[in-house]
Amino acid sequence: MVKSNNEWFDEIYKENKENMLKLADRLLGNPEIAAELVHEAFLALLQDINKVRQHPNPGGWLMETLKHIILNEVKAAKYRLEIPLAGNEIASDTDFYQPSLSDLLPQALSAHEKYLLIWYYEEQLSYEQIAARLGISVNTCYARMFRVKEKYKKLISNAQSM
Image 1: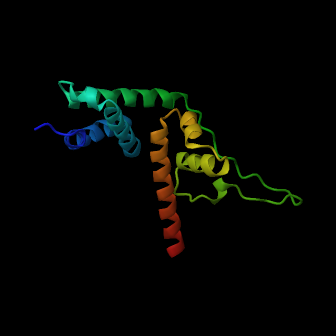
Image 2 (image 1 turned 60 degrees about the horizontal axis):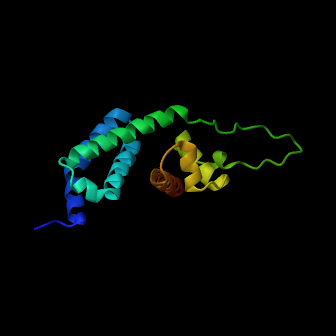
Image 3 (image 1 turned 45 degrees about the horizontal axis):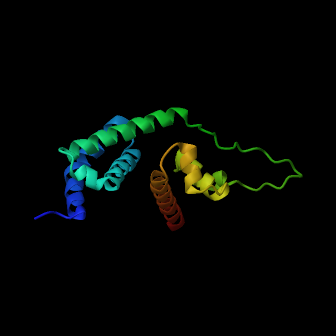
């Protein structure tokens, strides 16, 4: 009996996900980014599922795809511009001080997480613009923003419950 694309994908996913995560985490040293890049490799498989189903080694195809995605991420990271958050300028007596979003964000957020929130909420950049700024795919940008927003919500709810 011939498996449907969904059944075949589920099988390939279960067989390869853990090894791919281990490889990506070992190469990148960041489990969150590793998970995003593994996700991108599976998205690439879905985009070419009919072609990959004909491949003699779909697991090998996935690993090679993941290696290329990781290589591209590492190359792009070298050219990303890291912009420091605005310093806390002291307002003069005549100035009305309005805190920026960076002043209000929890200290537990990393600088990268703060950039994402500032770019999205304060600068009102789209996911596409943020992805272009970071040199990543829009899908990866969605995933990162989702995790940052969830982390922010958790930090805020913990702070309010204290």
